[in-house]
Length: 610
Image (cartoon, rainbow, N blue to C red; front, side, top):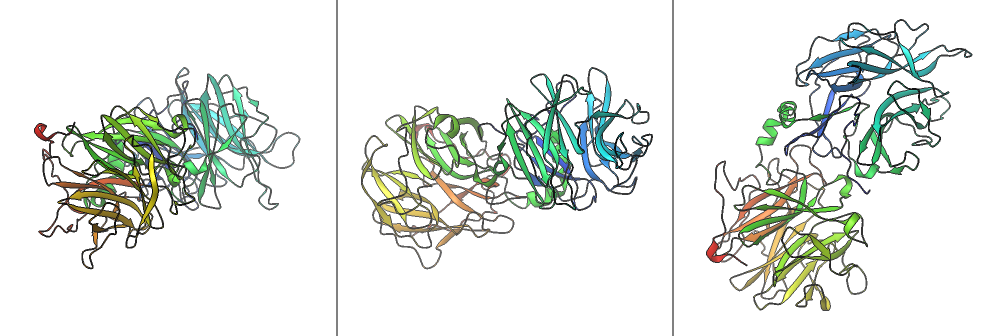
């Protein structure tokens, strides 16, 4: 997709959450499980990739004792106000407020639909603050007898309240002419957009669509748009958001324990962007609220012991496949930016003077904008310097490209306007995971491969032209992530084994007298980095030699702690050492390379590589 998905309500007339400042700020997504056991929360730093939090934050006590469809709003008083469905046939909803989403006020039952004649349901309430009117707006769906019908019909209703004790008389917010539930509202380009779900005929196996209506005011009048978001889906609980010039609508496949999503700029043409989001399995109809770093720390208290059981990651975002380099007096890490289902599209770089404090320098290459031959799957890059130029090798759509820049942080420009490497012909491995190496005699090499033997090409002086045919290098249990370096006249090869989704993803090694092999691996001590304790899937690494010394540091990724997966990973550092015979010693992913307050390792000016 062509824009990031940052999930937050963008209602300029309403009080609305905004993206929290600070590296650990982000979002919380409320939900319920099963039939309505209580308030569950998931958190995300980017609004796309969500990690579930284990406790139930509030157990229902009012109405029929359910908590479904919890909707949370941070009000102008600084409190988090929440409303929810309390039962299938209640004539009201639940309400509570909290300063921190952990400690809650006494629950109240708000009889918002009690005065509606013949009302049968009060479902999926949502809460908004109307800044101009200085009042809260509560919207929900109720089934009631309507003129000309013998059966109850679901429509969106509303009341206004300032104190959650007194309410205006309930009224219909919008009648599109068909049964509908689960209304949610946003503002886009000065107009309000109401999304609603056409009710399903469960017995008949007929599933309603998702529709949108627009208005100049959140209380209407509303005009139904002709083109639906989705014509027919067995799903409910839409959550609509505005991101830049796009609207994203999420919805709950309530029988499949998953979410789907659609995106549009004009509310007419909708794209399926489900593969770009990841929401915990079992998550059910809820709401999203922006969270400060302090709030996230508070609600994540249950994770504290688990987080403390592993070293703190070097980078403060989900990232993987780190290439670490030293240019001048600065270290740089070029990782894969993790996104759901590996559907990432941009490359960013982090810098550090001491290997301890890392600063994100920003995104310098975006496949969607900067590359003509790829849009997605921006994976496993590397960067190397030659003659004052920086050559960035990267993956896109299963191909390898090369971009050139005048600085380690970019900008970088596609050097060829086409891939440097694609699978086929004499290339008999997947063209991903490039690694560049320049030998002491000035000859440059580009290694790559996945799933079969590692391949290597010689590179000409310009670093963007392949020379000769590829050479296959058999490596024991090779999967991907090749790294090559030279130390004391010996060439070292390191690579990843198993699958990135496996907790047993690990690193093996070997040595050679030549940069193109053959490579010999030891019978003992072959695996030098592998899972330990809560640190699992510890592999796909890069390494850096501190210039002028024999100190070496490995940057690797592990599954995030907590909630990690094959595409939710964290970059960590560990020091690598050798025995007297030059054998790589096993590294412990539970070993913290730098204690708090450690000055780290500076690159001395006298040996700085210019």
